[in-house]
Image 1 (cartoon, rainbow over the protein chains, first blue to last red):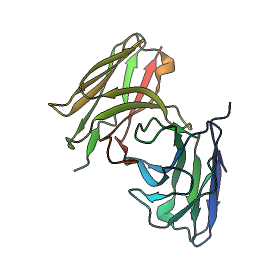
Image 2 (image 1 turned 60 degrees about the horizontal axis):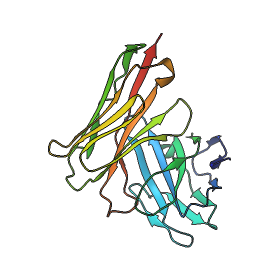
Image 3 (image 1 turned 60 degrees about the vertical axis):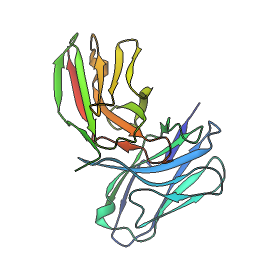
Length: 113
Length: 112
């Protein structure tokens, strides 16, 4: 059982380049999330999707866009990468709205030069 | 001031010790409290989940919530080297959907 799968695991970008982080879950969960983790800052919510077809901004949405492609997949796009977006990105999912029992992927380490 | 404060450590203890990890928070609306464990280069995994005040025990782990003091703790008994990880507290109100607030994480090392 794969759980939450993120690709790629590592990525290096130049300032101004774009890329999409992919996330898929096979647990039939309704809700999906994108977080970033920075030293001393903990995990901060970028965007979330309560259910297929809906997305909402989290704490730090600027510079990012998301797409809930279907119930399984939730992608995060950086249109014009900046050094401040250097971070580790985690996708997560949860079965039910409001319980926040999150299952996380193993992360994408992104460096923007 | 951050909504959730957690001592980042690092904390180093000998095998078999009792470990106490703590978080304080300022938002009195928080009702659900969690502890996540994160191994190096892995995603966090849910360890303990509690609602409102009180204690919850699961094997060697005990989660404690004191809402009057806005203080939560995770106790690890008979700590093992496999417990070496970063421990993150997290909490939310139950009405602000998607707004899980995390502490900064405490790095724990249990040495043999």
